[in-house]
Length: 175
Image: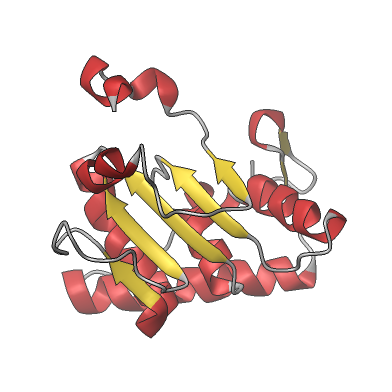
């Protein structure tokens, strides 16, 4: 994965980055280092998890360019470690996501808050009757998303889901 030109085709990964991509990866990695040091007393720097999100990030960027929209609105189901959302948020895209895994959800919330700052809304503590936030980056708990299925206020140019359907339980699939 780290050898120059190495490829991992299932996620469109190729170890060859533009200067802009390198700067983006470093910016997100630096923010993660700082916040993990402050919040957890230990610096952690993402490596492979963030790198494999470059393929989907490139694809979304090209999709936006093809349709004349530099900044997409992306909704992601099951973002895992959350680095695609972090890359999108860091570059000014609108982004919303939900996850059914509690540990991932807690990490994603922290990560997105650090990346998006004041333009982030965490909906886990919101009243059920509250309007959908107008924030550029929104994080929904799965039960809020499930309650919105028939009347969702979420509007997105792209709905993205990768490698999570086989991980869902029967309860999740009914949602």
